[in-house]
Length: 488
Image (tube, rainbow, N blue to C red):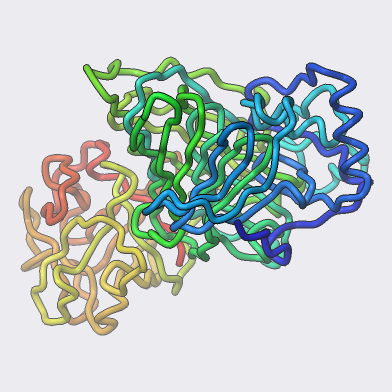
């Protein structure tokens, strides 16, 4: 077990140890004398900021994807995953640590706080800190679930904050067992600086663990997955991962089954210009599978985190409570991207059919007539999924693929009939290459070609499969005709 590199974590003074937690199940300190004992230890231990709140550095560890941590006869041990060989024994756990199951309640003991912080119920701005408050926002949705085989969520890494050099920490994650297991997207001090990183975090035996940190860029699609591996009658084994980032995987061995699902965004700053610039992030393709039988069709989500916490008037919106393709939107600073496209900027154009797939130049082609299709967001990103959007006046834009910058998004043959294919063609300024981009609310846009002003850019039959045709069709306001522009 490797001690965390604390240049990657936000160390703080003891004066900040009173910061509380937002994404939580129950943060009541049950035993006052035990809390006093913990505080005596904390006095000689620096504190670091984790997705669980402020934790003594001596209780935060990095574990790579070849090892796991396990409780054996009351001892905390590090073992090799492939062989079960004991790599290190860290000694006997206290009764308190041995039986700790709630990571947030346990973390609250380290600050001596009897009650957890709650999210603000009013919009906040950069003047909020002048009052000296630490009532930071955090939005949580939880639902009951048992017999979990896997739980996964997709989301796109948000834009950087307006204060792009800010190292104020924010976390965005999905998880199970109230967050005891959570794949986390981090920005700021905990990530190591003014950038995003991912890591898989978990709680066991009164200690807090994470896998390897991996840096990621805005616009990258993530999928956080927790998967049941086995149960031997004594221990439950789970794997936490981000799809496509195996170096960050962790294997979690615990004495109790993990139940319940959770989605969360938490910020350790009240300054909205230090939150992501996006209006919101969609936690989508939320999917639950079970080890036997059939999962319920829907989640019964419970929402917490304040009634109104952003200038937009929203914080958490349950778009779909489906257990197979659900969506929950977390709102940030209310800076609505609908105010206009930035001319000359590079974007990924994300379809509302699943809020993850993007417009893609087939096969990365560069020749005239190469078809445009729908494809899952590549990670790392590829230039055939990036588009430079430039104003050409009168409300119209040209949309040019980064892999073929002399070409432009084009209605094949300048057609106007429903089903006309979209391709790329050398830019000529024709009406087939001029696009009116109009906000339709919620961060979505509609694209109408000048050659067919009653039609819109459309994903064939509202499909989501890779290779789905991109066409024009009579404007109908469906998700097949709505797109988000994610700046790169």
